[in-house]
Image (cartoon, rainbow, N blue to C red; front, side, top):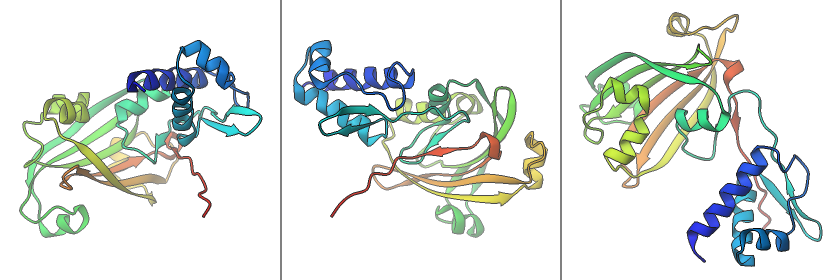
Amino acid sequence: MPKSKFEHIYRDLKEKIESEEYPYMELLPSENQLIEVYDCSRNTVRRAIKLLATEGYVQSQHGVGVRSLYRPIHRTNYLIGGIETFKDSAIRNNITTSTHVISFEDIICDQKLAETSGFEVGTPLYYIKKVRCIDNKPVILDINYFNKRIITDLTKEIVEQSCYDYFENELHIDIATSKRLFTVERVTKQDQENLELNDYNCMAVIRGHVFTAGSELFEYTISRHRPDYFAFADTAIRKHV
């Protein structure tokens, strides 16, 4: 089964589900109809449906068909079960965004930072602080630490466009794993100085450690979100033993 055929069907069905051509709780075309539409094998269709089900877009019901479970979330949502960039989430959520770097420094990891970041003492790092705007409102404060032994020649301009595009397409870094901790914390002076908070007195905070395929830690990030612009989406599938 050519992978390109499977990917095409998956992307096309996903787009139709997200555009609500196949509305929430409605059945998709039958397996036989999809085979005819896409001119492919039964196994190819089933592979595409299986991936959509894994991502929570559909659920197969024996003797009934495949039902759409997708419902759009109206606040900006991010994915728990994957490594998704701010740019990726903006495209998926169909929102206007911008990034403004307010600090870009070279530092050396000291003992205090090593305890929270996971970097070894003495590691050369990029320290970057940036504000994310959604619909022209500054609502996210990101603080990034990047390992300069792995990330080279980073610039402010690259950061304002897309770090991960640069990491993967220019530096050819194989990004593999992210470990994240989610908390709710009080607003800090730094939040107040950089973000439009309205009356909020707390922030949704994500601390993330990101590793290469070789298990090298190359990023530690603290991302502070205004609550009304924050939602993380996940789909859990119960496994029967």
